[in-house]
Length: 109
Image (cartoon, rainbow, N blue to C red; front, side, top):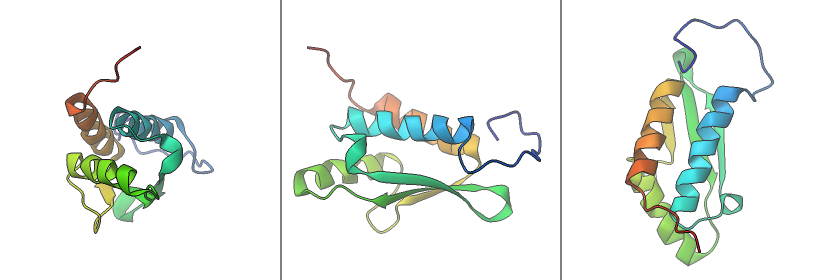
């Protein structure tokens, strides 16, 4: 878990700083690959045994963006047939960070 591994008994409505941190990395990864975060829907859900599942639920609708999106999925070790990461929050975050680090940097104009 990102918050030190301690078991949490705090109940949230699905939005907490850890979820936001993960989704912020998703947005950064998309933008670095030329995709607006508004073109993709990603969500975090609870999985079995206290794990989380980051799912890319709606891909881009245009073909050019879909090619870029497939590169994003590949950078995460995913494919068009498997668009979910399952694991501890810290592991999902680290995988996203590693993919961001390997992605092209956005150039300022």
